[in-house]
Length: 407
Image (cartoon, rainbow, N blue to C red; front, side, top):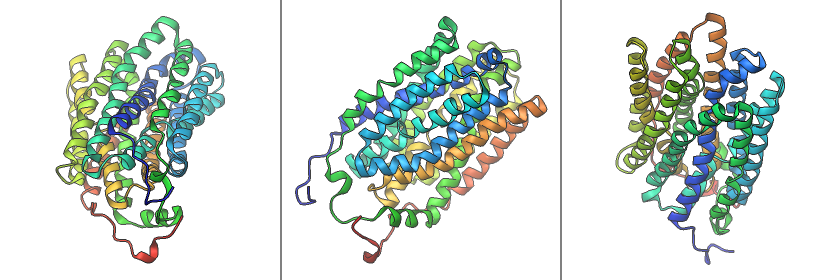
């Protein structure tokens, strides 16, 4: 097919309905992993660091695999990547339940699930959105997809808690594995016309990578996203145990994670909508700064169920609200041809932060018997994230004609 005879792009309704459902499942399932920390470690006789290291590896594997999954989706379409990701997700959850050694657990809950998430979450779906939604609605559409993932977090946390309480943690993982397979039929709704992936004159993959990795604003976005990963994964994985250590019931932790997901619907949608009206770098800086303020207040007020719920609601608004503006800036600067791949590279930085947030939470707890040091690291990183996004330039990059080649 040539550029002169393009196929009709996917409808915005189809893209958002299927993409939102996929993100709801993929992000919703993983958001409840913190609920499994204590039952698994107590049943297996493992330290918290063992569980935390597996989740850290999961996030790192997700980040490392992300650019490759994105490049394949940009070149051959998202459907194939989503199908493979769904199968890996289901298999990883089943093997996570069957693992009896720390090494096996790291392979299943860590490496395998990380690979699965790289092919079933935001970067892949956002690539389809970027290529099929007009630029004047793109940030809003990304906000809708992110809000769907947030709703999945709200929905799945009580479901996973109920599964664990009713059937045991192992059976709960098996049931979640079956649920992950629903991504396969949903992926067929994101089958793109051929012209959106490869017709006409465009950059090669190598040229796109060299351009992005050498561009200052791209580097700053990556640095900011590192902060996001550290904060959200530390809180998501370790807050249930932090609350239990301070005498609060598991139901408080479940409600807290659910509130994060519920208010994240508001935050991500609002961030996507605001991104159409004001500079996205200011949105990102405000999010990181407000996270630090929220954590400082949380650590300095009496710890009660109500203070936990207020903190979770505030953090929920700020939770994944970084996702729509960050990806919209990448599309705005570099275009949409390699949006999944470039989004994957930015997300790699996010996942390096996630690795450290998950692992250091367990490591420093085992060393000190407290999460206090990690909380304050999260505060300092929030200040850094607020400052590092301010110099980002959101204008489309100017490319010399000679730099453009047939891929």
